[in-house]
Image (tube, rainbow, N blue to C red; front, side, top):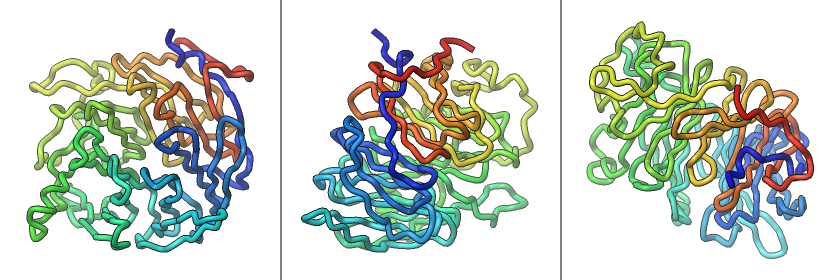
Length: 369
């Protein structure tokens, strides 16, 4: 039985005093970590609704992301925030928490990506265009590069980065994106082999053809599937799924927008030898920085929306299978449980909603739109 269309609210987690900007499960899936505008980080037993631990992050502004480092007995947490800081929290005996500043971006730091299976290595990106590499064994951070626009008239312009993700199938590869139309793919081995080279040059670029040269769009969310597919969410536009053969190469030619109004409507048609990415439509992504994610063994694509709903599509064909009322205002985050058909969502409201197929509170389910 396909359980995803039967999701409904199982429980609401209520402890934060501000918008909840990040939710993330630990590797086992029994703990959910959250961060908020109230600058607090909370570890939840989501099944019982009990807050196991709540502590001040040490940040001076809204917490944008919080993640539990794997293989640390859930005692090591990294955070980034609107103050640009990247911090490391360690849970000591008796529940005492020590937080330490690791590095600081100039401008807001939106996202982090942990190297799969590593208890030490992670990356951050910020609105200063910087990608930083961290090794918790040394406590040191390395500034890998600053991301710049490729447009001829603005080649010195910094791309304000809002999303970063690591390919779980090949952790040497990671993608970063932000205030322009391109998702850029990098290979960390290039930096390791020869740090004197210009590592800021991506190995590949991804963008729907009709958005090339469009200065009105940007990217708010990235996610890799377990098959190295790259999911990209655009503000004021749609969500696209790229396979690795859809890249534009390491040196795409900047151009004006292509007059292909039907691009998004014919996502699987061959044009100029390149296969179009699968497209996912229906949500609205304009007001906030929204993430995007896969669900249930990467068979589904999920996003929040300005209308306060969760949208879930089939990954394979882009069919919208359900829309669920989740927030009175905006849903920003949806995270899938690592093993079970369980979701956590958050947004402008101060609570976190847990979704399961065996829920007591019914949600609005729309099979087709």
